[in-house]
Length: 77
Picture: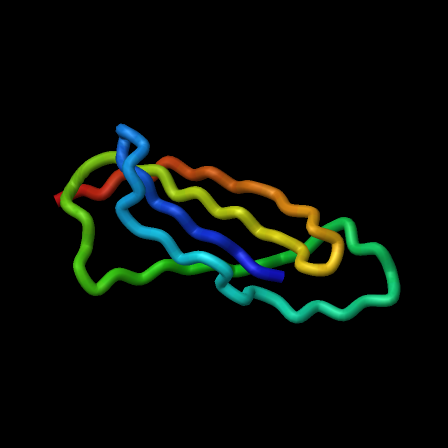
C-alpha cells in the first residue's frame, strides 16, 4: 500500500506533496474490511499561520483500489 499526501492552499495551489509513500506491507489470506494506518507529517520549515487542507489518498497496489481522506487544519501563530 502507498499513500499520496498533498497540502494545497485555499486557491488549490500545491504547497507540499509526498507521492507514493509506502505505508503498509499487508499480507492476508482474507478480504480485509478495516485497516489502521498512522500517517504523520513533519516540517522543517513550518507554514505561516492560516487555514490549510491535507489530502491523503491511500492506494492498494495489488487491486488498484484507493480511498481519500481530506482534513481541514488551522495553523496558529
